[in-house]
Image (cartoon, rainbow, N blue to C red; front, side):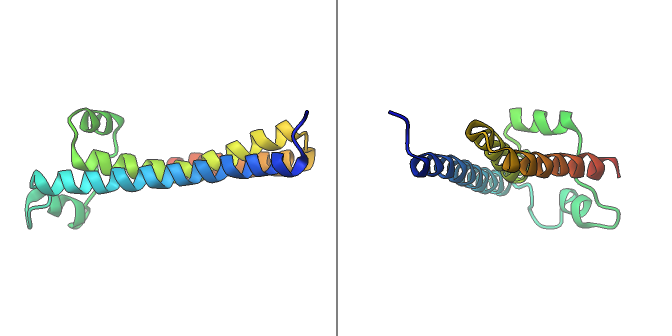
Length: 132
C-alpha cells in the first residue's frame, strides 16, 4: 500500500525539521564547547595579545583552512567555535537541499524549479561573498 499524500508531506516536514533541529543543536553544542575550552585554556584571559589581535585596529581572525583543521585536531577552542558557526551557516542550505530532493521525489516540477533556484542563489551568494 502506498502512503497517503498527507503522510508523505508529514515525512518530508519531519525530515526538514530534523535537519534544522540537528544543525542548530549541534552548532550550539560546538559553540558552547569551544567557548568553554577557550576560557579554560586561558585564551581570552583579559588584555592578552590574542584579544588585541581580534578586536584591535586592523584585527583579523585566522581564516586559513590549515589553521581551522589544525585547530580542530588540537581541540583549539576558537577552531571549535568556528566549526559551530560554519555548521550554523550550512544548516539552512542543507534544509533547502533536502527540500529539493523531497520535491523531486514527489515529482513536483514547480517546487523543484523554485527550490533549485533558491539553492543556486544561496551557493552563488557564498561564491560571490568569498570572492569579494
